[in-house]
Amino acid sequence: MTPLMMAALGLLMVATAFLSGLFGMAGGLILIGVLLALMPLPTAMVLHAITQMASNGWRAFLWRRHIRWRPVFVYLIGCALALAVWSITRYVPDKPVALLLLGVTPFMARLMPSDLKPNPDSIWQGTLYGSICMGLMLMTGVSGPLLDTFFLGGKFDRRAIVATKATCQVASHFTKLIYFGGIIDQAATLDPMLAAVAIAASMTGTSLARRILEAMTDLQFRTWASRLITTVAGYYILYGSWLLLARSNAFAF
Image (tube, rainbow, N blue to C red; front, side):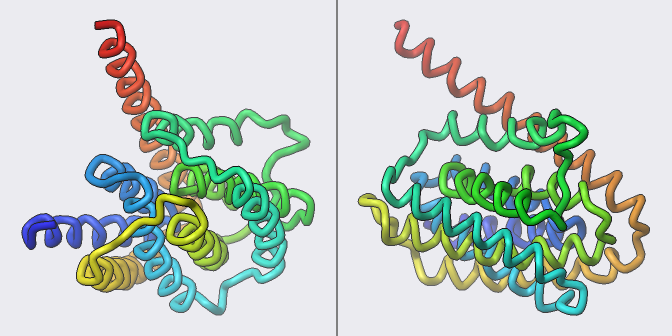
């Protein structure tokens, strides 16, 4: 990768980490879409995992007093179950399928019956969402839209949402790094310099967002976070559909 491309990616990572630092979501969803367009899927997954571990880890540290540990531990049980299953199947989807899955998941969560609405304090829901989110993580690189909807469904304030979700995401992305970096056959390689840029950029963007998050109200946070998820998810549905259509037309000719 050229120095110019590396610098451009670094700026993108600062911007997406800032967005995630502000809303606790969406930044990773945008970043993986760009990485999937530039790199082979396994390499994109490894770089994304390193970036998001740095971003979420630093965010969790900055807001550590607001972490709700019970949902974290229950979520990790679900993650472990999903990793066990996916380690056997070792399924890696192609890019159009991954993009469509990225876009569809938040709408699926919103269509759930009222008695099954997300509740981060529920043990069985935490385990179920942990399993599903980890499965999505290993297929698409992120589980953000679904996990975002899960935490927005609870009674946490904005700081607790950001801190608790960040802690869950550190474990999720670490699991993804193990999966794509070692478990599947097509192990990915990554430039150490690019990895260093990713870590520095992610921590910078996360730090810049802290003061703005403090100034927001919980209502503003929930309103804009919901709109952001819908916009980004809708884009990936359109993009994934376009890729599938383009591939079908190519086969037709």
